[in-house]
Image 1 (cartoon, one colour):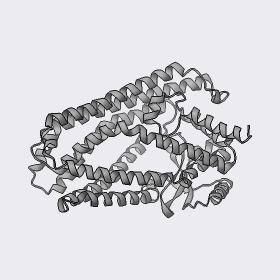
Image 2: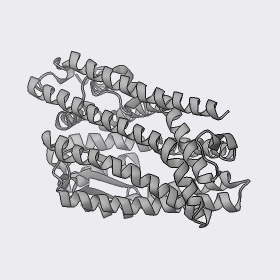
Image 3: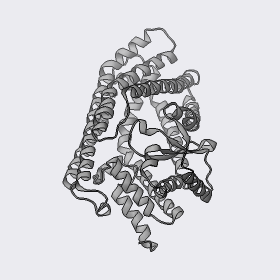
Image 4: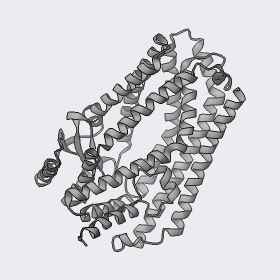
Length: 420
């Protein structure tokens, strides 16, 4: 049985590795074959030089991501087949409570993963992003962000793992249910805490300074009956020239956030169209639907993990003499992660449908698709988006419809309503 479990894992793991490589290669090949053609919807908006820069940026990003994924896969295999038995044996010999063993165990694995990703993060930020004129961050700020992220991750991971191990230790027959309850509450608290506690640790949030724009946003909010804690602009320009806007938080902590880079590069009408799209997500209850799915799926996963972490062949397969539950949690996560990759197209398809519904809502709220189309074209140009993604790459990785398809969909709305 142990050999069968190893074969199953390698089948899933190597299948993911190979298929990710295939998707990356066909996406690059597709882009190079079609990348010299300016899509009709972008005619007059971008020139051949900009299109070439878009292609180069996508290719460079894709190649760096492929190298990082490969490095991560090699490290995972090394940890699984070389380090894991030694680490478990060492922890068992410490004579400390199992909860502390688990915290040390996952801290070691997290440190290995973080250390391995640092060179790629640094290269992406200070070489690739600077090459294309995006990165504005300093080394000092980057290191400060790194330290803050480490502290927050350590605290959150410690709380979650500590609670989970306590449930496993003291409620061995029902820990999966209480662990799921705690996970659900933890998620809800994080959704509330992020905009009011965590995000301000990294950025300065202040009310939108443009009084006219703020009044227009408030009028749009009143039109939809949606209430938010505030409308903020954030100093993201100190890190990057990328542009964005988003809604965040739940309940009374909901807030609208606009990047300062977006405010400086887009018209009021374009910003309102982008916000109308985000309002569409709330009105269509997309956030609640995704949250409900995560909560429901996590219940199934918690029970599934509960059923397997006490199974001796799982540990025997990877040379683990002891059977500490924290090692079982790690092994189960590896299987689920590899298998989940092949299920990702279903989730991505649902998200793309949500995006189309939000675009439709933006049209209904503003009465025209023109500002949204203009905003998407500007966002594509400013962020050097890929205008020619391969359909299979879209199925696995795109949470939004491809830009050309999205703009054509919006144009159809205006044509049907006699706007063009």
